[in-house]
Length: 435
Ligand SMILES: C[S@@+](CC[C@H](N)C(=O)[O-])C[C@H]1O[C@@H](n2cnc3c(N)ncnc32)[C@H](O)[C@@H]1O
Image (cartoon, rainbow, N blue to C red; front, side, top):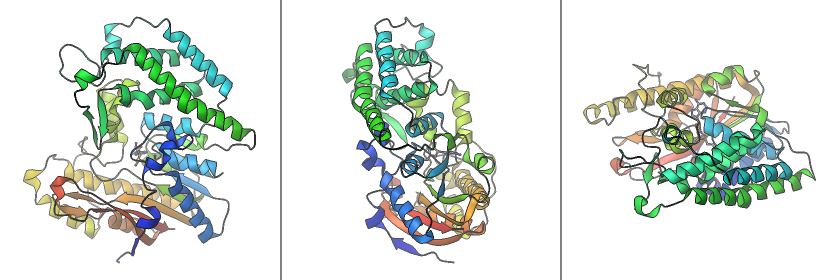
């Protein structure tokens, strides 16, 4: 069956990126490139309420990321279950959903940190360098993510945070540190990976106390302001939080055991795209420098738990779902086998859709009879062969007993220079699915 593709560039074009959140209360705590805006969520909720004529809505976001979906839904007063596999993203999402911060405690912890900066520890060489070879400047390497002084500044902040008695404030202050990390590092986020800043060896000269100051400024200018705002809002109304419905781990498993059956009305989500982006790589600086991962075994374990949208793990020979569009794309890409930049490419594609299938199996049992799913994906291309991810997801949904209402084209995403054959870009869409 062919699915209806509707042009939604006007409605969704400007709200599918995180950009709009950058100056918004709490959403702005950490700029998350792969996220969408809060307006995207409110627009969908309004539509759902209009169609289903109901007020009590229970939601689910299987890929929480920076927490945009559950955070916006809690502000609107709706319960939202969410899952996140990356320990850093999980902390980020949870700390943004917390509603019990007070300005008094915040100021106390700030004072504690400042006090700590005046008598920082002497660190052993071992502690400065960590298990990751290129994390910190040392003699035998040409490139490193953090200069030695920057590393010392970060360690001071982390040691100060570790002395807090409250886990909730530890998490908040760690997220504030994450939000300045790239600024003081030698790299910037560049699509799938991080790249070195121009002339970084000559231009990046932050001292240990510069790092402290940049951190304190961020706490004061962004976090303190928003916690003050939170107090103002709390003085007028009771705040609801989705924090306790956010679970750390792999949604492919958690969906089956953390949610009661038949209760989810609305799913709004954006899984990793099938673009070989490895989130573990993209957020390597945060994961390594803030102690979320201690060694390469931890890196591998995280990669194993993430959706198979990357080629970093060898999964063995995987089966192919019985979907014509998928089989055709695999066959066409296989023709370029001798030019593959990674031998896992076909397996990644197979694994990605097997994972989406598992997710839909879970959704089938968890969704209420009036349930709707708004599923944001983008198509992919390898060797100029386009994989119509949205079409294949539609088939998976139908095979699991759902009905596809339509595919809404939000925008066209530019392809890399290797995909010249796909002149007008790849469709990024929102698939609307009903139980
Ligand atoms: C595109 S981002 C979601 C962005 C989110 N909508 C926002 O606005 O912040 C996808 C997220 O899925 C997470 N993820 C990948 N595999 C996962 C899994 N198996 N279970 C749960 N989360 C996963 C990634 O760590 C990443 O944070």
